[in-house]
Length: 161
Ligand code: SLL
Image (cartoon, rainbow, N blue to C red):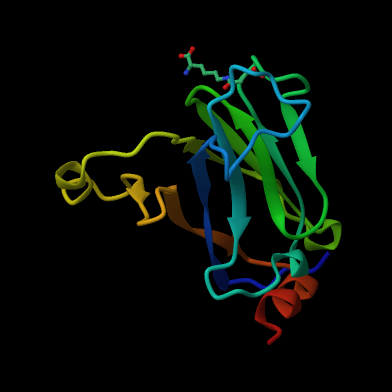
């Protein structure tokens, strides 16, 4: 495929997790192990709300090996995974681009957070998880995916409004 030389395009994405303790209002699904303490959601999304499926075809969230089938594939937006658990761990998030893009996959790493940080620590650490008034922990990272010398098709996809 023809590539456009001398051009690179970067696309902003945000990724990370939300987590809430299990409670009466936030119960575990019936099939979840009883020792799970939190319900969490991992996600990859566009910060401006655009549909990522214009150039992303698949996201694989690689969970801790204590999970059955730790490689969780999401083939369509929203690129999210809702699960429950008791512990924090590092997640590998592998992003696959549409085949016509001619781009290799990219892997991002995220520390899944369940527990709030003290507010004074949050203000000192960029990227520390924050806690909402409702008690939800949010750990969100920003990244720019850079496509160097994109194919003509990719260029059209990435710049389409
Ligand atoms: C550790 N960070 O150092 C921990 C590992 C693993 C968490 C945390 C669920 C497992 C399941 C779960 O929360 N695993 O019951 O499916 O050892």
